[in-house]
Image 1: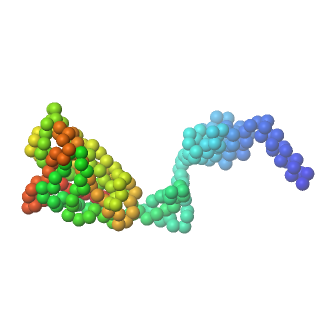
Image 2: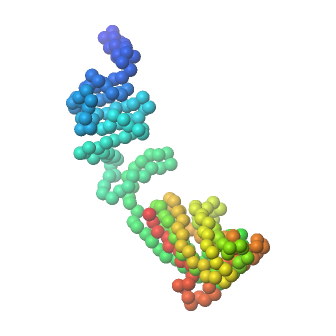
Image 3: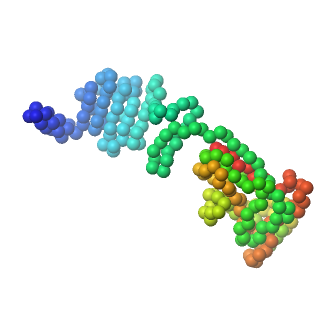
Length: 253
């Protein structure tokens, strides 16, 4: 026990005296420095540093580097940089974390894309009023994953009293049954009364669960005199021309 205590005191004294600890090196270049191959010159080369591990005074760890700028920095050299073997590793898996930041390998979701179209001929969209775009089918998330939604708009501007003929409208996406928007964008364009409006925009849905239903909502704003209830945008009143109706594409990323 006396020997153990003496050794411990010597280690503490060594640390206090030098403020750096080196293993396999008499010239530690950080608070803690391991030269695994014990091959460092006074000024080590990049190849010599590849087998070094350091911890800096900032608490950063470097593997293959003496100057890590983040909590863990790895310079791989000829070897692979990182392997996480949790018993489920295999080709084409992705590393994901849960709400607590715990990472595991998960199956890569299959790619997915599906097109929807507006079906209510002559559907109307009023000034500063949020209206759900009616589609031919519910927009349903098929499997857990990350998704984008692209809207290709085609319709008419029915009122225009703004200066310079500037028009705009908000496009929203949300999970049906909720009030929080997953994403939104205000789209600007120019036009006069009864002009055709066409534009394409994409909105990010984030991480979604299987079987969630998504809604697209439209709110025209700039382009009227601000009269409450003024008809602003309108879809073509011809069900036989689905090519002239707005299209929605849902796809995984």
